[in-house]
Image (cartoon, rainbow over all chains, first blue to last red; front, side, top):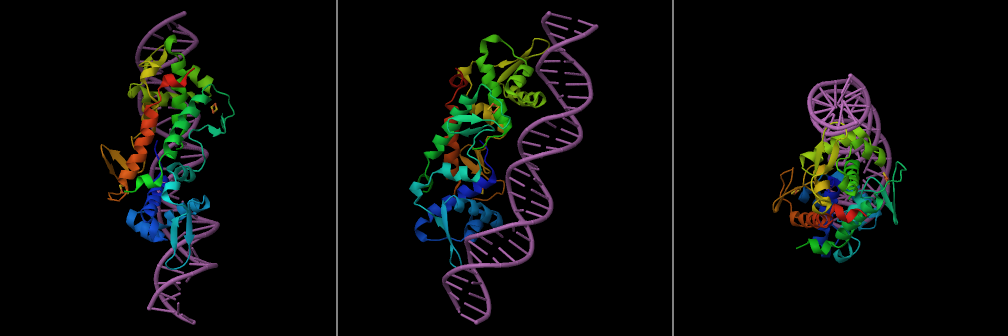
Length: 134
Length: 134
DNA sequence: TTATCTCCTACTAAATTAGTCGGTATTTTG
DNA sequence: CAAAATACCGACTAATTTAGTAGGAGATAA
Ligand code: FES
Ligand code: FES
């Protein structure tokens, strides 16, 4: 429900890249200025995004970052999920069809948590970057 | 995407109450035991839920908590939103139709963040407590 | 009158978040 | 070639949030 600035920044930056999809690589400094984000912090965010193959990079002057695929092929779920770390929505971790708890308990409500987590995932998977540019 | 244990605990407890909806008030100690949650922590969670009028309480021995309305009339959005504090999904705050930022900037992507936030809200509003028991 | 309960405030420990700093490697550009 | 711009990397820190504890006071039922 509440996203960290990391997700917010990451998503904003990705939208920025989507808006400039044809223009080739864009340096982070441009995004940082434009969206008012700390450059150093944004760099680390992009390290994660790159590792997840959501963006590709070019080094050197006139280098920068670009989306690795077209905006239609990147959904918000991938971005947020990558940046928030684990694929878990709740404290109890979803893996496949089961929910596991760090506390190793077997409580009665796993299917319910799973339902909620799935609804959110589905909603986010449905939104592509291309839907967010205008 | 990732919820705190507060939301997890709160939601689990609310589901627990929904499952015992006919049985009248249920003491927190029962829920705490059953769901393996720290009692003191759960008490504070319920203080918030009560303030939001999602539950009602009865003091004294054989007292406890119960849902304030029937499980069909309580959606997951209300619960999570209440527990996560602000109604904002992102670092930038949604109010009415606009998104405001703590940093007072006017960046270009507010409508996009708003779309994502709305999609999640809609998905959660669609899930009632009654959908999660059974 | 005792055992359960809600309810309240304050404190603390642990974890996470958000950010800084200083530097290295690589590539374009002048 | 030299300089500027860029990605990339790791360590460090400050601030905030989270999760949980402790110690009660007040209400109610048995
Ligand atoms: S699965 Fe996590 S508390 Fe039961
Ligand atoms: S509205 Fe928050 S950074 Fe622009």
